[in-house]
Image 1 (cartoon, helix red, strand yellow):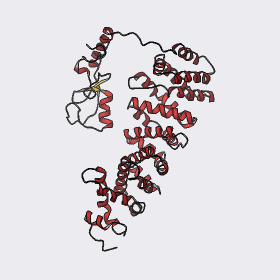
Image 2 (spheres, rainbow, N blue to C red):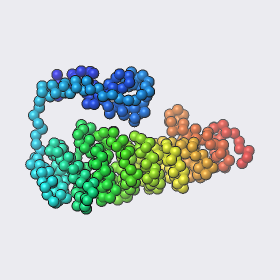
Image 3 (tube, rainbow, N blue to C red):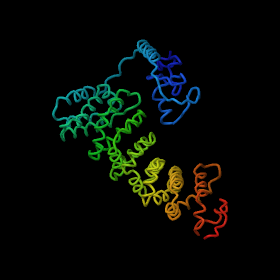
Image 4 (cartoon, rainbow, N blue to C red):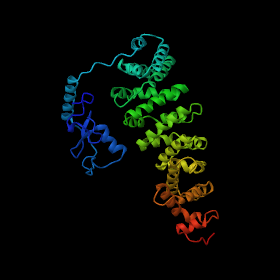
Length: 418
């Protein structure tokens, strides 16, 4: 057996058919095939698949049943592997004693903020070895315990400041999908609430730490997106406030990425974001946004416009069509793709005279016509542009600015009523 890769020779049935990694939480679906829970749930919920990945059989029921027998076999096999290839514990970091002393003093000292600042300076100055040592010493558990104190009914300003400082330390700690216990701690209801409170009421630096922590959690475990769904509308208002932060562009960009991760996961989150005023915020940020932020904002508007409520909010905003039209063909192919999809959604479901006139006046139609010059069959964006022009060309052909050659290309004929 390869000592550097003890899982190399594990029984094939211990591996998830999707990831080919050894399963930690095996569940069986209706076809009788067993998968790692998070992989099969992602297959069903995120990718919206209705087949069994291994057999490609169509299935109707998406219930999963824990495979306890297989789980016991895997656990027993892991124990045997550990016994056969015991490796010495990782060496303590150069800051081990200092970290241990600081963590040990936090619970007993009344000056928690000062102690947390010292802890933060140790972690910030240390390398990856120091940060891993911090995790092994139970540092994250200590931080979460301090953060949750802000939820106590009689918590004071000192508890809130300690929560902010704890988040400042936490955001420096790398979290991966291998840190299962840490991720579960961070995803607990109380920890999520504490972080959301700082996001709503904290300083600019603390809000960035909160956003950064949320994003790391989302990257480490996709199920975090479902936990985020349970947050109220105020949570989304707070994230949108960070998006609008003109002082800290890093926090704003981080908040945009976080919203994309949440919105892609569920329609429920999109509806809460729309209720929180996301369309208005994003449309008003779009004209002055940088190239990288522009593409993210366009992607978010596209996701929101996939809901009826989002399309309504977009059409009711006087600058929506103008802002998106201006960015099409002027930023990136990605931004143009999202812009055309937005126009397709709006013109398909809200093809009022006002919407169609705004598309013409603010240059959206001109941009769609320009896309006709892209080689046929090489762009889904071009194909969608053609569909929009064919769908509404008869309304636009009445205007002198609508090109005659485009009328002929689309087979619209002459407009005798002009």
